Image (tube, rainbow, N blue to C red; front, side):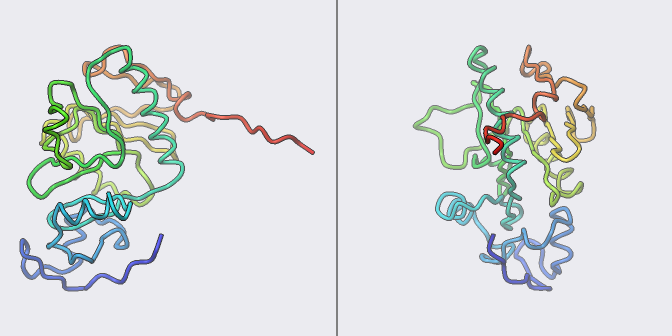
Length: 228
């Protein structure tokens, strides 16, 4: 990933005049500064800027208070998200309850707030007709899955959860590759922590969905290389 120029120490924004970069970063959740894009300047970014990065430059980022925040990327996180998405897709082929979006699915949770959960499940009745579906729809995922990387801070994730539930989300799964655990939230601070000895289920939202975490976090392929 290309290095970004250092952020200004005293960036003034239209929505928060006089704030410092430290103030800005605190609102974003004390994330690593190299995830905060400075072009366009913080506080001035628009949805058009977001779509340019996501669709043209293939840079996944979210729009928060006029700031573009890059999503951390990694092989392990991406692999887990794809595997979990595959298992959810299998379930939905037998249970036509809604549809899934991946990590590049832009969802407007509120004016000026666009998030890209790693997996988003939306019930059928909330999905507009294809011809009415804009690039950034006003849709809150019924289930939001976030695969947490080392650069995602607890404050950042707490802010995201609050935004999801405020917008209408009923279930959030936070997946931790390093500890091989999943936190299941039914409210911003109401959670269950599952380990590899447990089974992830879909609750009332996805009745009958069950996935042993040993399967999710286990090895998903065999080394085909022959010993010489």
